[in-house]
Image (tube, rainbow, N blue to C red; front, side):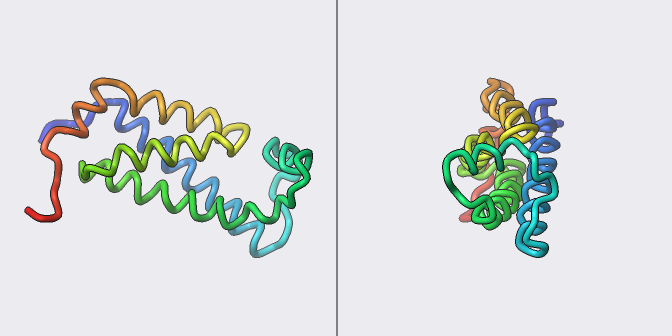
Length: 128
């Protein structure tokens, strides 16, 4: 097994940061019923649209944990791994601020040809 390219390592680091940030913020909202950073850009946007920001706690928790599963699928080179990383990346674009920047980095890295090649080499299969 050859070393993974830098883009795969970057996706992993960015995905883990997003996973921790989103899960932590979601749990913080659910446990303490307040926001860590009440001036966060995503909260301001949600308030302008007329939604209750507290309703975003569970989606942040689910998306944060989904990042872990997507990264595991990517590293195991399962057929759904790349798609899961892309879905998590697109949904993380709505985590306005640092989350958007990190999600863009992950999406750019996953689209590199070297990343696609690495993910397609030696696809693991549950049936093998």
